[in-house]
Image 1 (spheres, rainbow, N blue to C red):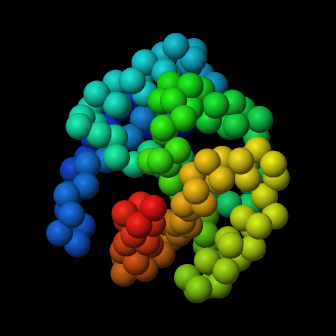
Image 2 (cartoon, rainbow, N blue to C red):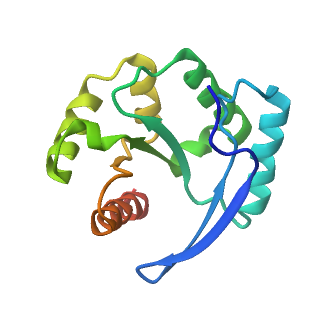
Amino acid sequence: MRSNTAKCERQTGKRSGTLIELVDTPGLCDTDEDDDVILRAVGKSVAMAYPGPHLLVLALRTGRRFTQEEYQAYVKLKKLFSEEMSKYLIIVFNGMDALGDTIDEQKKALDEEVKKMPGELKQVLQDANYRYVGMNNKAAPRDKEILLQEVMIKFLVS
């Protein structure tokens, strides 16, 4: 599996009056890199996110098996950040367009999928206090904005 992000990248923007700084890191499951290289990149991303990070996003794909490799990457992340990481963790499931035609259908289908998730993924969701949201990258800009607001609400309320 190859990560879409080759190096740490930082983006800044405003959404609904809130300043958002996003630091993207190479994926922990990037099999083309050694663990040490990837963990250094994650460490660099933490420094780039100063005074945060305030939210850690674990991006997964809907309708695809949660692999042992992905779970082990999550365990490494927990070791790096400690158990406190769970307070800041939100799971983002990509590929919502495969779950239905409307946002409501997609959300309902994702909620049903979450109820049936296997043990290790269920543990990750429990660690995140069931803070998860689905994203549809093919959605209209207005719908994407609604989904982004949902992410912000889930983080601020939790």
